Amino acid sequence: MAIPANKKELINAISESYHKLKCELLLVPKSQVNTKELNGHSKGTSMSIHNLVAYLVGWGNLVMKWHENKNQGRPVDFPETGYKWNDLGALANKFYNDYKGDSYKDLLLKLEITTNGILNLVENKTNEELYVDLWYNKWTLGRLIQLNTSSPYKNATGRIRQWKKNRKI
Image (cartoon, rainbow, N blue to C red; front, side, top):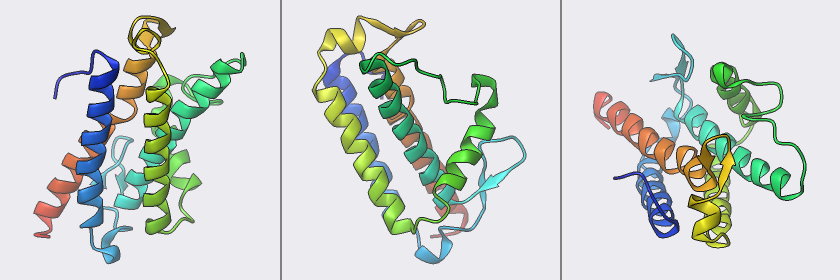
């Protein structure tokens, strides 16, 4: 799938990648969701499917937080308060911890709610707001949304498929 270049393509990319991811996530045996066998987001670490979903929810919520803060005229700490772009492994661990108490079912619901919220945000923006106006440094809002939704959804789908293949699931 090509990098979305407009509002319609972004909506399609998010919707399609989320649908494929959701199908894979629903096929993961519940008894295996906390098994740490996937390569983690920090070098030399392992994570579970539950951690992977927490990571996706965390980034989706950050996108919404960035948008809300910017919309309210408040400063936006990119990527997150207390974290730098060269410290994303620690941010991933924060996401794992933020959602460790959630059941897998609840976490999947949070992913759906977050994805729907982002799709709603995109629907309410013009193509110019998404792909013409620079939003953060050299990035447009549409590109930032894509980098934190459809791209990681696609990556997660591939990781899960490979994990299932290795486990003959």
